[in-house]
Image 1 (cartoon, helix red, strand yellow):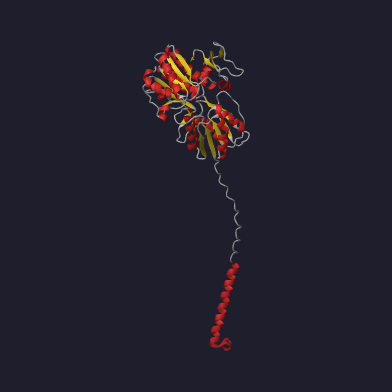
Image 2 (cartoon, helix red, strand yellow):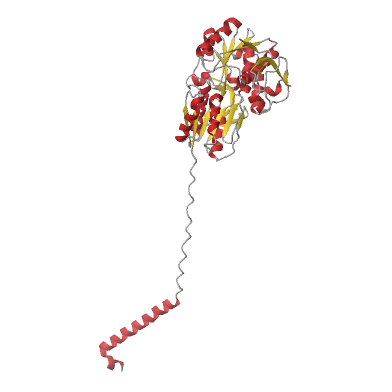
Length: 433
Protein backbone atom coordinates (compact mmCIF):
# COMPACT_ATOMS: atom_id res chain seq x y z
CA UNK A 1 0.00 0.00 0.00
CA UNK A 2 2.72 2.28 0.94
CA UNK A 3 4.66 1.74 -2.24
CA UNK A 4 1.54 2.18 -4.26
CA UNK A 5 0.75 5.39 -2.69
CA UNK A 6 4.30 6.78 -2.84
CA UNK A 7 6.25 4.67 -5.24
CA UNK A 8 10.05 4.51 -5.01
CA UNK A 9 10.38 8.18 -4.68
CA UNK A 10 7.41 8.22 -2.37
CA UNK A 11 9.08 5.69 -0.08
CA UNK A 12 12.12 7.87 0.19
CA UNK A 13 10.01 10.90 0.90
CA UNK A 14 8.06 8.99 3.55
CA UNK A 15 11.22 7.97 5.29
CA UNK A 16 12.49 11.53 5.28
CA UNK A 17 9.28 12.77 6.78
CA UNK A 18 9.38 10.13 9.51
CA UNK A 19 12.99 10.97 10.42
CA UNK A 20 12.16 14.63 10.55
CA UNK A 21 9.19 14.04 12.81
CA UNK A 22 11.20 11.82 15.13
CA UNK A 23 14.07 14.30 15.36
CA UNK A 24 11.69 17.12 16.06
CA UNK A 25 10.09 15.10 18.82
CA UNK A 26 13.47 14.31 20.36
CA UNK A 27 14.51 17.94 20.30
CA UNK A 28 11.21 19.02 21.77
CA UNK A 29 11.48 16.37 24.45
CA UNK A 30 15.02 17.37 25.32
CA UNK A 31 14.04 20.97 25.57
CA UNK A 32 11.05 20.16 27.72
CA UNK A 33 13.11 18.07 30.14
CA UNK A 34 16.06 20.54 30.50
CA UNK A 35 16.12 22.67 33.68
CA UNK A 36 15.03 26.24 33.29
CA UNK A 37 17.93 28.69 32.93
CA UNK A 38 18.70 30.58 36.15
CA UNK A 39 17.03 33.91 36.62
CA UNK A 40 19.36 36.78 35.90
CA UNK A 41 21.06 38.12 39.09
CA UNK A 42 19.79 41.49 40.29
CA UNK A 43 22.18 44.31 39.45
CA UNK A 44 24.87 44.82 42.14
CA UNK A 45 24.30 47.78 44.42
CA UNK A 46 26.61 50.60 43.43
CA UNK A 47 28.42 51.92 46.53
CA UNK A 48 29.73 55.43 45.98
CA UNK A 49 33.51 55.72 46.53
CA UNK A 50 34.37 57.52 49.75
CA UNK A 51 35.91 60.89 49.05
CA UNK A 52 39.64 60.96 49.63
CA UNK A 53 40.58 62.94 52.71
CA UNK A 54 42.60 65.96 51.74
CA UNK A 55 45.20 67.02 54.31
CA UNK A 56 44.42 70.44 55.72
CA UNK A 57 47.05 72.99 54.86
CA UNK A 58 48.40 75.82 57.00
CA UNK A 59 50.80 78.72 56.72
CA UNK A 60 52.92 79.70 59.72
CA UNK A 61 54.08 83.32 59.59
CA UNK A 62 56.72 84.65 61.99
CA UNK A 63 57.36 88.34 62.42
CA UNK A 64 60.98 88.70 63.57
CA UNK A 65 61.73 91.85 65.53
CA UNK A 66 65.36 91.89 64.32
CA UNK A 67 67.34 90.74 61.35
CA UNK A 68 67.80 86.97 61.19
CA UNK A 69 71.35 86.56 59.93
CA UNK A 70 73.92 87.02 62.64
CA UNK A 71 71.48 86.88 65.57
CA UNK A 72 70.85 84.06 67.99
CA UNK A 73 67.27 84.96 68.97
CA UNK A 74 65.66 85.50 65.57
CA UNK A 75 68.01 82.91 64.10
CA UNK A 76 66.56 80.27 66.44
CA UNK A 77 62.97 81.28 65.55
CA UNK A 78 63.79 81.17 61.83
CA UNK A 79 65.31 77.71 62.17
CA UNK A 80 62.16 76.64 64.04
CA UNK A 81 59.90 77.77 61.20
CA UNK A 82 61.97 75.87 58.69
CA UNK A 83 61.96 72.72 60.80
CA UNK A 84 58.18 72.83 61.09
CA UNK A 85 57.85 73.10 57.29
CA UNK A 86 60.32 70.24 56.81
CA UNK A 87 58.30 67.93 59.07
CA UNK A 88 54.84 68.93 57.84
CA UNK A 89 54.54 68.95 54.01
CA UNK A 90 51.14 70.65 54.40
CA UNK A 91 52.60 73.56 56.41
CA UNK A 92 54.30 76.51 54.76
CA UNK A 93 56.60 78.92 56.62
CA UNK A 94 56.82 82.62 55.71
CA UNK A 95 58.33 85.55 57.59
CA UNK A 96 59.17 89.23 57.84
CA UNK A 97 62.30 90.72 59.43
CA UNK A 98 62.93 93.87 61.47
CA UNK A 99 59.27 94.28 62.44
CA UNK A 100 58.59 97.00 64.99
CA UNK A 101 55.41 97.54 67.06
CA UNK A 102 53.91 99.93 64.49
CA UNK A 103 54.44 97.49 61.64
CA UNK A 104 53.28 94.31 63.43
CA UNK A 105 49.57 94.68 62.59
CA UNK A 106 49.96 95.93 58.98
CA UNK A 107 52.40 93.12 58.23
CA UNK A 108 50.09 90.59 59.90
CA UNK A 109 47.13 91.64 57.79
CA UNK A 110 49.25 91.52 54.68
CA UNK A 111 50.40 88.00 55.59
CA UNK A 112 46.82 86.90 56.32
CA UNK A 113 45.71 88.24 52.94
CA UNK A 114 48.44 86.06 51.43
CA UNK A 115 47.16 82.97 53.27
CA UNK A 116 48.75 83.00 56.74
CA UNK A 117 46.80 80.95 59.32
CA UNK A 118 49.15 81.43 62.30
CA UNK A 119 50.94 84.74 62.90
CA UNK A 120 53.55 85.10 65.65
CA UNK A 121 55.48 88.11 66.92
CA UNK A 122 58.82 86.82 68.19
CA UNK A 123 59.21 89.51 70.87
CA UNK A 124 56.61 90.84 73.28
CA UNK A 125 56.94 94.54 72.50
CA UNK A 126 56.01 93.97 68.86
CA UNK A 127 53.88 90.84 69.35
CA UNK A 128 51.35 92.32 71.76
CA UNK A 129 49.69 94.57 69.15
CA UNK A 130 48.50 91.40 67.38
CA UNK A 131 45.90 90.88 70.11
CA UNK A 132 44.08 93.95 68.78
CA UNK A 133 43.16 92.14 65.55
CA UNK A 134 42.55 88.67 67.02
CA UNK A 135 38.77 89.18 67.13
CA UNK A 136 38.76 90.44 63.54
CA UNK A 137 40.28 87.16 62.33
CA UNK A 138 38.71 84.42 64.52
CA UNK A 139 40.02 81.60 62.30
CA UNK A 140 43.62 82.76 62.62
CA UNK A 141 45.90 81.92 65.56
CA UNK A 142 48.02 84.81 66.78
CA UNK A 143 50.98 84.42 69.12
CA UNK A 144 53.47 86.49 71.02
CA UNK A 145 56.54 85.81 73.11
CA UNK A 146 56.14 86.56 76.82
CA UNK A 147 58.34 89.13 78.51
CA UNK A 148 56.11 89.97 81.48
CA UNK A 149 52.58 90.58 80.11
CA UNK A 150 50.26 87.56 80.11
CA UNK A 151 47.31 88.87 78.08
CA UNK A 152 45.56 86.10 76.12
CA UNK A 153 42.47 85.56 73.98
CA UNK A 154 40.92 82.41 72.56
CA UNK A 155 43.10 82.76 69.46
CA UNK A 156 45.91 84.90 70.95
CA UNK A 157 48.50 82.50 72.37
CA UNK A 158 51.49 83.38 74.56
CA UNK A 159 54.65 81.29 74.60
CA UNK A 160 58.08 80.96 76.17
CA UNK A 161 60.50 78.07 76.86
CA UNK A 162 61.96 77.29 80.28
CA UNK A 163 65.41 78.42 79.19
CA UNK A 164 66.45 78.87 82.81
CA UNK A 165 66.75 75.08 83.11
CA UNK A 166 69.53 74.91 80.52
CA UNK A 167 71.03 78.14 81.88
CA UNK A 168 71.34 76.46 85.28
CA UNK A 169 73.45 73.72 83.67
CA UNK A 170 75.56 76.38 81.95
CA UNK A 171 76.07 78.04 85.32
CA UNK A 172 77.45 74.81 86.80
CA UNK A 173 79.97 74.61 83.95
CA UNK A 174 80.91 78.31 84.10
CA UNK A 175 81.38 78.12 87.87
CA UNK A 176 83.75 75.21 87.47
CA UNK A 177 85.80 76.94 84.74
CA UNK A 178 86.47 80.33 86.33
CA UNK A 179 89.91 80.68 87.89
CA UNK A 180 89.58 84.33 88.89
CA UNK A 181 86.20 83.78 90.51
CA UNK A 182 84.65 86.45 88.27
CA UNK A 183 82.00 85.76 85.63
CA UNK A 184 80.45 88.47 83.44
CA UNK A 185 77.09 88.88 81.70
CA UNK A 186 76.63 91.39 78.87
CA UNK A 187 72.91 91.99 79.26
CA UNK A 188 70.15 93.86 77.44
CA UNK A 189 68.01 95.63 80.06
CA UNK A 190 66.12 94.73 83.25
CA UNK A 191 62.88 92.85 82.52
CA UNK A 192 61.24 89.75 83.92
CA UNK A 193 62.47 87.61 81.02
CA UNK A 194 66.10 88.67 81.46
CA UNK A 195 66.04 88.57 85.27
CA UNK A 196 64.55 85.05 85.25
CA UNK A 197 67.17 83.71 82.87
CA UNK A 198 70.03 85.34 84.75
CA UNK A 199 68.67 83.81 87.95
CA UNK A 200 68.85 80.31 86.47
CA UNK A 201 72.47 80.86 85.43
CA UNK A 202 73.37 82.43 88.80
CA UNK A 203 71.95 79.48 90.77
CA UNK A 204 74.06 77.07 88.72
CA UNK A 205 77.20 79.16 89.34
CA UNK A 206 76.55 79.27 93.08
CA UNK A 207 75.87 75.52 93.29
CA UNK A 208 79.23 74.92 91.57
CA UNK A 209 80.93 77.37 93.94
CA UNK A 210 79.48 75.60 96.99
CA UNK A 211 80.46 72.16 95.72
CA UNK A 212 84.01 73.26 94.87
CA UNK A 213 84.57 75.55 97.83
CA UNK A 214 84.95 78.66 95.66
CA UNK A 215 83.81 82.24 96.01
CA UNK A 216 82.40 83.43 92.69
CA UNK A 217 80.92 86.77 91.72
CA UNK A 218 78.60 87.26 88.77
CA UNK A 219 78.71 90.76 87.26
CA UNK A 220 75.88 92.08 85.09
CA UNK A 221 76.15 95.20 82.98
CA UNK A 222 73.26 96.38 80.81
CA UNK A 223 73.57 97.64 77.25
CA UNK A 224 70.07 99.12 76.97
CA UNK A 225 68.71 97.04 74.07
CA UNK A 226 68.87 93.58 72.54
CA UNK A 227 71.07 94.22 69.54
CA UNK A 228 73.78 96.87 69.89
CA UNK A 229 77.00 95.24 68.65
CA UNK A 230 79.32 98.18 69.38
CA UNK A 231 78.01 98.74 72.90
CA UNK A 232 78.04 95.00 73.61
CA UNK A 233 81.69 94.87 72.61
CA UNK A 234 82.56 97.81 74.87
CA UNK A 235 80.84 96.24 77.87
CA UNK A 236 82.53 92.88 77.27
CA UNK A 237 85.88 94.65 77.21
CA UNK A 238 85.04 96.50 80.44
CA UNK A 239 84.04 93.32 82.24
CA UNK A 240 87.34 91.69 81.34
CA UNK A 241 89.67 94.64 81.91
CA UNK A 242 88.08 96.16 85.02
CA UNK A 243 86.49 93.17 86.75
CA UNK A 244 88.94 90.41 85.86
CA UNK A 245 86.24 88.27 84.28
CA UNK A 246 87.53 85.03 82.74
CA UNK A 247 84.16 83.50 81.76
CA UNK A 248 81.76 85.62 79.70
CA UNK A 249 78.16 85.13 78.63
CA UNK A 250 75.38 87.37 77.32
CA UNK A 251 71.71 88.25 77.39
CA UNK A 252 71.94 90.20 74.13
CA UNK A 253 71.74 89.09 70.51
CA UNK A 254 74.88 90.05 68.58
CA UNK A 255 78.12 88.11 68.24
CA UNK A 256 80.25 90.91 69.71
CA UNK A 257 80.71 89.44 73.22
CA UNK A 258 81.87 86.16 71.66
CA UNK A 259 84.35 88.05 69.47
CA UNK A 260 85.81 89.74 72.54
CA UNK A 261 86.06 86.47 74.46
CA UNK A 262 87.95 84.90 71.57
CA UNK A 263 90.27 87.89 71.24
CA UNK A 264 91.01 87.93 74.97
CA UNK A 265 91.44 84.17 75.28
CA UNK A 266 88.73 83.59 77.89
CA UNK A 267 85.85 81.13 78.02
CA UNK A 268 82.51 82.02 76.49
CA UNK A 269 79.10 80.50 77.29
CA UNK A 270 76.56 80.81 74.47
CA UNK A 271 72.89 81.76 74.40
CA UNK A 272 69.80 80.72 72.41
CA UNK A 273 71.59 78.55 69.82
CA UNK A 274 74.47 76.16 69.34
CA UNK A 275 76.52 78.99 67.88
CA UNK A 276 79.44 76.77 66.87
CA UNK A 277 77.37 74.00 65.31
CA UNK A 278 74.71 76.07 63.54
CA UNK A 279 76.48 79.34 62.79
CA UNK A 280 80.11 78.28 62.76
CA UNK A 281 80.92 81.12 65.15
CA UNK A 282 84.30 80.66 66.82
CA UNK A 283 85.11 77.12 68.01
CA UNK A 284 85.04 74.90 71.07
CA UNK A 285 88.44 76.37 71.97
CA UNK A 286 86.49 79.46 73.10
CA UNK A 287 82.89 78.29 73.49
CA UNK A 288 82.71 76.06 76.56
CA UNK A 289 79.01 75.29 76.01
CA UNK A 290 75.83 76.93 74.70
CA UNK A 291 72.18 76.43 75.40
CA UNK A 292 69.98 75.75 72.39
CA UNK A 293 66.33 76.83 72.20
CA UNK A 294 64.05 74.75 69.98
CA UNK A 295 61.09 77.08 69.44
CA UNK A 296 59.70 74.51 67.05
CA UNK A 297 58.56 72.42 70.04
CA UNK A 298 56.20 75.26 71.00
CA UNK A 299 55.26 76.10 67.41
CA UNK A 300 54.35 72.48 66.76
CA UNK A 301 51.73 72.64 69.53
CA UNK A 302 50.14 75.65 67.83
CA UNK A 303 50.30 74.08 64.37
CA UNK A 304 48.77 70.78 65.52
CA UNK A 305 45.94 72.59 67.31
CA UNK A 306 45.19 74.71 64.25
CA UNK A 307 45.24 71.74 61.87
CA UNK A 308 42.86 69.90 64.22
CA UNK A 309 40.46 72.84 64.08
CA UNK A 310 40.75 73.47 67.81
CA UNK A 311 38.84 76.66 68.63
CA UNK A 312 40.07 76.61 72.23
CA UNK A 313 43.83 75.97 72.10
CA UNK A 314 46.08 76.23 75.14
CA UNK A 315 46.80 79.94 75.41
CA UNK A 316 49.95 79.91 77.60
CA UNK A 317 52.72 77.57 76.46
CA UNK A 318 55.59 77.38 78.96
CA UNK A 319 57.50 74.22 78.04
CA UNK A 320 60.75 72.89 79.45
CA UNK A 321 63.24 70.08 79.01
CA UNK A 322 60.59 67.40 79.57
CA UNK A 323 58.72 68.46 76.38
CA UNK A 324 60.02 67.21 73.04
CA UNK A 325 59.48 67.19 69.29
CA UNK A 326 60.55 64.63 66.71
CA UNK A 327 62.12 66.35 63.70
CA UNK A 328 61.69 65.27 60.08
CA UNK A 329 64.93 63.26 60.26
CA UNK A 330 63.78 61.38 63.38
CA UNK A 331 65.83 63.37 65.89
CA UNK A 332 64.02 63.82 69.20
CA UNK A 333 64.82 67.16 70.81
CA UNK A 334 63.84 68.87 74.05
CA UNK A 335 62.52 72.43 74.14
CA UNK A 336 65.88 73.56 75.54
CA UNK A 337 69.17 71.77 76.10
CA UNK A 338 72.89 72.38 76.43
CA UNK A 339 74.55 71.99 73.05
CA UNK A 340 77.89 72.70 71.38
CA UNK A 341 79.24 71.84 67.94
CA UNK A 342 76.15 69.69 67.22
CA UNK A 343 76.57 67.64 70.41
CA UNK A 344 74.20 67.60 73.37
CA UNK A 345 74.39 66.87 77.08
CA UNK A 346 77.77 66.13 78.67
CA UNK A 347 79.24 65.72 75.19
CA UNK A 348 78.39 69.38 74.53
CA UNK A 349 81.09 70.53 76.95
CA UNK A 350 84.12 71.69 74.96
CA UNK A 351 86.80 68.97 74.70
CA UNK A 352 89.29 71.63 75.75
CA UNK A 353 87.18 72.67 78.74
CA UNK A 354 86.18 69.20 79.94
CA UNK A 355 89.56 68.29 81.52
CA UNK A 356 89.38 71.54 83.52
CA UNK A 357 86.03 70.66 85.11
CA UNK A 358 86.07 68.49 88.26
CA UNK A 359 84.28 65.18 87.85
CA UNK A 360 81.73 65.99 90.55
CA UNK A 361 80.52 68.93 88.45
CA UNK A 362 80.34 66.81 85.31
CA UNK A 363 78.34 64.21 87.22
CA UNK A 364 76.01 66.87 88.62
CA UNK A 365 75.39 68.36 85.17
CA UNK A 366 74.45 64.92 83.89
CA UNK A 367 72.26 64.15 86.90
CA UNK A 368 70.34 67.44 86.84
CA UNK A 369 69.87 67.31 83.07
CA UNK A 370 68.45 63.79 83.27
CA UNK A 371 66.15 64.79 86.13
CA UNK A 372 64.82 67.84 84.30
CA UNK A 373 64.19 65.83 81.15
CA UNK A 374 62.04 63.49 83.25
CA UNK A 375 60.29 66.41 84.95
CA UNK A 376 61.59 65.29 88.35
CA UNK A 377 63.67 68.31 89.39
CA UNK A 378 63.81 72.06 88.79
CA UNK A 379 66.35 74.63 90.06
CA UNK A 380 63.58 77.12 90.83
CA UNK A 381 61.84 74.58 93.06
CA UNK A 382 65.07 73.52 94.75
CA UNK A 383 66.38 76.93 95.82
CA UNK A 384 65.04 79.76 97.89
CA UNK A 385 64.75 83.17 96.24
CA UNK A 386 66.30 85.98 98.24
CA UNK A 387 66.04 89.49 96.80
CA UNK A 388 69.17 91.42 95.94
CA UNK A 389 67.23 94.68 96.24
CA UNK A 390 67.81 95.35 92.52
CA UNK A 391 65.64 94.59 89.52
CA UNK A 392 62.67 96.24 87.87
CA UNK A 393 59.72 97.80 89.69
CA UNK A 394 56.46 96.82 87.95
CA UNK A 395 53.02 98.35 88.28
CA UNK A 396 51.76 97.50 91.77
CA UNK A 397 54.83 95.31 92.29
CA UNK A 398 57.87 97.06 93.80
CA UNK A 399 61.29 95.39 93.99
CA UNK A 400 61.47 93.41 97.26
CA UNK A 401 63.91 94.87 99.79
CA UNK A 402 67.38 93.36 99.89
CA UNK A 403 67.47 90.21 102.00
CA UNK A 404 63.76 89.45 101.62
CA UNK A 405 63.03 85.74 101.22
CA UNK A 406 60.46 85.89 98.45
CA UNK A 407 60.17 82.13 97.95
CA UNK A 408 61.35 79.35 100.27
CA UNK A 409 63.38 76.37 99.09
CA UNK A 410 61.41 73.30 98.06
CA UNK A 411 58.49 75.22 96.62
CA UNK A 412 57.83 75.58 92.89
CA UNK A 413 56.62 79.05 91.85
CA UNK A 414 53.55 79.22 89.63
CA UNK A 415 53.97 79.75 85.90
CA UNK A 416 52.18 83.08 86.21
CA UNK A 417 54.63 84.27 88.88
CA UNK A 418 57.70 83.15 86.92
CA UNK A 419 56.46 84.71 83.69
CA UNK A 420 55.16 88.02 84.99
CA UNK A 421 56.28 88.76 88.56
CA UNK A 422 59.91 87.66 88.89
CA UNK A 423 61.17 91.25 89.00
CA UNK A 424 64.24 91.10 91.28
CA UNK A 425 67.81 89.86 91.02
CA UNK A 426 68.91 87.07 93.35
CA UNK A 427 70.99 88.04 96.33
CA UNK A 428 74.70 88.25 95.51
CA UNK A 429 74.29 89.32 91.86
CA UNK A 430 76.47 92.35 91.16
CA UNK A 431 74.60 94.85 88.97
CA UNK A 432 77.01 97.39 87.51
CA UNK A 433 76.02 100.93 86.62
